[in-house]
Length: 272
Image (cartoon, rainbow, N blue to C red; front, side, top):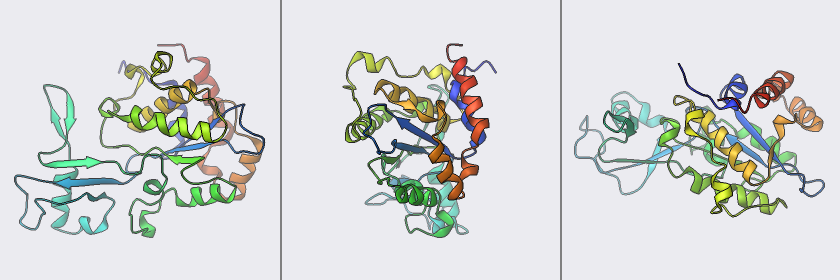
């Protein structure tokens, strides 16, 4: 309906809930694997909340908490009656004046573990099997020589909200990518430099209903500013494909179809 979408959105959506970016640099030391940034889909990472509410929907609901607790995913909060408390805490309130979403009065929600993989590996901090998400993939990456928090990182976000509401993302992404690039021999830039600021994507190219795709767009722009490149844009390395097939993870990266769509999107990157 007249939206200008980021060229990578259409190419990455067929991969389902998994959005995997492989960021490579020609200056990486020989034998060092390209760093990987994992961007989850909707419901794909933990959320935490802290309460100081004026009212509650049920007498069993907590009105105030001294610290942050797991809002997503905690199976105990989905029990009958208690689920009403959870719905009241996780919902968003739309402000018709500012046309933005806000947290309910007395509810503060944060996204834990940016740059780490734990909040993506396990949606339930108790490591319940039902909440396991990226764990199998990260375990395989570790087996191939990757290290959590160094060259394999997570980029969780508040998947309830539109991309334009993701304030503060730059402050988290810059040090994450700069640190990763420097640790692996990449050529970093000062994020305060105007040249880097100009690399930020135009919000008009985001799909307001798809914050995950917007996160991919922004990570790509920031990576480009750090002189990194999307490995998938040039085609995933042959040995990586072999490892994915051996690990049974090939369905997560739809092969030549994804590369063909990325190439097509790159060819139309200048279009509005």
